[in-house]
Length: 153
Image 1 (tube, rainbow, N blue to C red):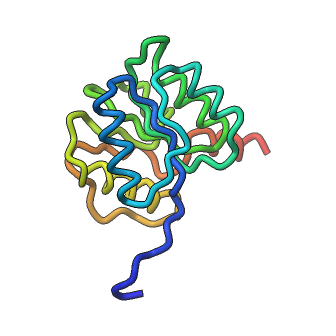
Image 2: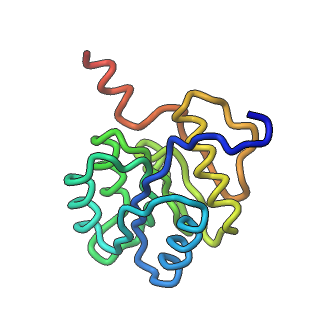
């Protein structure tokens, strides 16, 4: 396909963000780019409930500082369900590396968010990303938790 759009493997996203304007802008941008937003939530408890109920989430975008806890808990549970996570925060702590596929630093340009999602999609499909967007750090080439489950079998 030279000029056509490639088929996406990441379509359905869970947005976990406690800043209303950032949440609104993110949801609007992603919908405009034909992503489906499963939900936009601002609390860890809500995110965990959705992760435990929904079976078809392709990516979680998780802020860290939430009113009822840390987005790292969301990332941990998403990893247990085999759902990739991108941390989206002002400062990414070292412990995020074991729980997420990457981290995008706020504030970010809309094109950088979209490019970071494409990078995670490429990695999930086994491709090597050509270039990382500004403010994005890729942690791993595999889903957190998959190496552990493979070693256990």
